[in-house]
Structure formats: C-alpha cells, structure tokens
Image 1 (tube, rainbow, N blue to C red):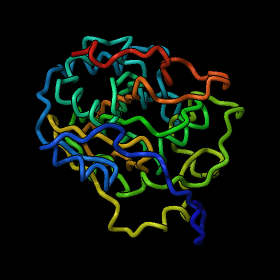
Image 2: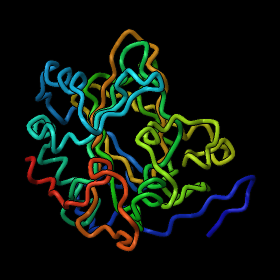
Image 3: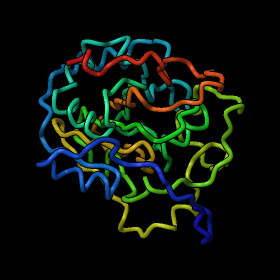
Image 4: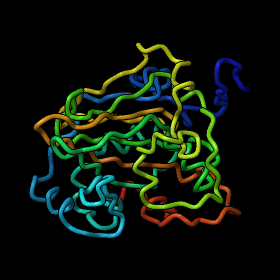
Length: 282
C-alpha cells in the first residue's frame, strides 16, 4: 500500500519478528513497535584500545575514507580480517536475541567499524540499510538486523546514533537500481545533493514522522542495540574531543530470500553470501 501525503511511502507488509515469541522476553514488544531496542550494560568489554587502533591504522581492502580521502571512516570485513576481535563482542545473549528476531540461525552479512575521530568524524545522513541491500544485493525482504556495539560512549555531541521510531514499517521513495554503477564511497551515506539517487531519505519523507519520534541512542561501552534492517537512522558529526567508534554486526537469517538472478557485483565484504554462522564467534 502506498500512502498519499506530501510524499509517497510504501507500507511494509513483511514481519518484524520472524519466529515464535518466547515468554518472558518483554523487550520484543518494544522492538516490534519501534524497530530497535537498547540492551543496557549487557556486554562486557573484551577488547583493548590497541586492537581497535590497529584496525584503524592498518590499510586493508574494505576501508572507506571520509570525503577528504585521507581519514578512515569505516573498516569492513571485521569477521574475516579480525575474527578474534569480533569474538570478543559476540555473546550468547546477542546470538539468542538475533535468533529470536530472525526466526532461524543467524548468519553474518556484513561487519564493520565506523570510526568517528574526535572533531573530524563525519555525519551519516538519514537512510535505511535495507534500501541498499534490496537495490544493490537483491535482498527480497528485510529479514536482517544490525547489532550496534559502542566501543566508546555515545552521546549527542560525539555523533551518537539516532533512529526514527516506527520508520521500519515504511519504505521511502528512491531511484537506486541494481544496475546502477556502484562505488565504494557510496556507503559513506553522506551525499546530500541528490537524496533519491543516492538512496537517502529526503526531507519530504522525514516530515511524515513527528519530531518526537527521533530517538538519540545514548549508550555506554557495554550496552548494545539491535536495529531492524529497515529502520531509518542517522548520526551527526563528531564535534567533541572524544573519539566515537562503533562496531556494526549485520545478520541475516539463513533463510533470508535473495533474487539469485541479480549479479552480485558488490564485494563480499560489503554483502557476504557465504552463510557464515554467528555461532562460529561464540
């Protein structure tokens, strides 16, 4: 169904929770309603600053730069290049919660660290990840989640994550196509000049939601959040004197549907099709 307002949004018909809901998991109602849930102080710190600095400083494939073409913005492929580091963050609780949402065994689709260095880390404009996974990779339904793990405290001054409550139930208009030429820097999500062509949510789509639906995720190291694949999210520049690094672990179900006829032209570290089970990192 397409909503007719000042813009056109398409209502999502696919589930948010893909499996049976066990008793005693009260967070599931919040997740289903809002498209995300924050788990407070559940994940103990199991890494060193030296480990993360090494990832930041080492030049590898899967590195995304800021618009200055010098500063590291993101490093992808953590599960392949730094499996021991990733294992330090994957807990049994994360595994179990992912399995409940996805309804079957969770597998890794993407992993990356976003580096927002103090005073220089750039913003990420409002977008839905599923918009890209559907258009570029042929993911047919948003049966996927992002596990968001802060490596530093997140707040409004250092570029913490913001999510639009309830946005996971709507698809915004865009003109991305699978055949469109794709470049690594497209995943910077910072091209504001042509929103629809770059897959970003435009201002007209955002006005469908009241401003009180914007939630800033103030998290400390040890917290983590799970976010629906279609939740619209953004983050501001890091204008503070503190670094703000975040690990994103993107998971699909082993049964998530893809259009096999589409050419898989994005590199494997952007959209992994190897069906690597999350349980491997427990």
